[in-house]
Amino acid sequence: MDSADIVNKEIRLTKPQYAFVTSKAKNPAYIAGFGAGKTFALIIKAIVQKANHPNEKLWTAFYFPTFDLCRVVGIPRFTEQLILLGVPHTTNKTLFFVESPYFGRTYFRSMDRPDSIIGYEVAFSFVDELDRLKHEKAAEVWGLIVSRNRQKIPGGGLNTISVASTPEGFRFCYSMWGKNPKPGYELIKASTYSNSHNLQPDYIDSLKAIYASNILAAYLDGEFVNLKSGSVYPEFDRKLNHSIETIQPSESLHVGMDFNVTKMCAIIFVLRCGDPHAVDELTGIYDTPTMIQSLKRRFPGHKIMIYPDASGGARKTTNASQSDLSLLKLSGFSVCVNSRNPFVRDRILSSNGMICNSLGIRRFRLNPDKCPQLLESLEQQSYKNGEPDKTGGLDHAADAFGYFINYKFPIMSRGGTTMRMTGI
Image: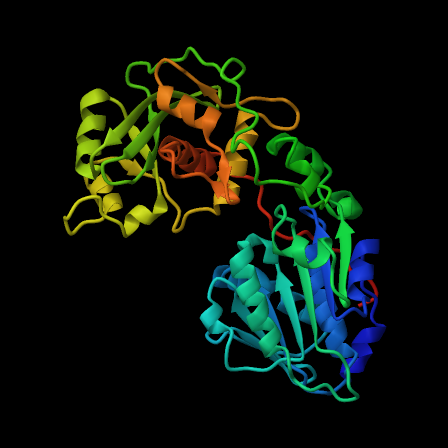
């Protein structure tokens, strides 16, 4: 088998995917909504570029937001396509690279670990979800990727960097590809609809049901829109999200919790027909032991499930040797927490989708008499420098609220779609 044979194998692509894969630009970007096949297009472009240089050991690199995504998304999906195309290869899971006798080596690196982007040279680079990084971090990583992208190509070919990302407001991708792009920077946009034939029939309706209406332009249509200015929770309405529910004897309580020394906060929820109602709050608590005592004193006879800030596994609001999460578990509470906090943007999207989705459905409700601090936070917290403002003290209740909502009602996975390939 010669690697050039792969060029003759048929791979089914959408029109925008085809435009991206066949682009001759030095730095093309595929900016698209959820489910538009971004990672798939990026992988196919990498394989095609390698195949267009038969038997030349030109190395490549893939960049993902985290090493976890390299491990569970990048490497498996890349090797899956190599298998479908009949390309022999080996995988080094320790050093995060895939090697082929026809294509050479492909590195997988994390963008949240810039120190890992050293010590190698590649001819082509492929960057997935670059806009998940803050603008300053993305600019730093982009410079490091450019510095690695220098392996000499026989015949004087271009060292290219290809990007696929969901737009996250006016961040790095907008500044490089959307606003006065430099020569060689080509923008290819795609909506979720472009790939609808490869999605479940209810996928797009599911997006509409989850996300607030002002978000869909970005996450369904792939448009650069303002996600940063104004209110953090623009659809919250104290009348439309009103609840008269109170805690009933012996029922289970769900407690979102934010750790801050002298400013700990807990928001207490109950479920009614599967929907969350905020029915009480504990604010301005000094430390975790005090919070534990307060919860036990105020809610005796209730099963209590805590949904805390994941950083509490390492942080301590006291000088004791045990972490905040350990103290909660030792106190007999059920602690529901992932290994790491969600992206702030994902937590806010989950919250806004429950407050009011694009279909006008409001699943989250709040008892204003019992939760005055949360009411104030949801009504008044705004963005500052592109992030939720933490200088006014409105973040503690909102964060506690968001930790529970994101864990119990997470936004839809951003995972890739199942693609049909013919003629392999």
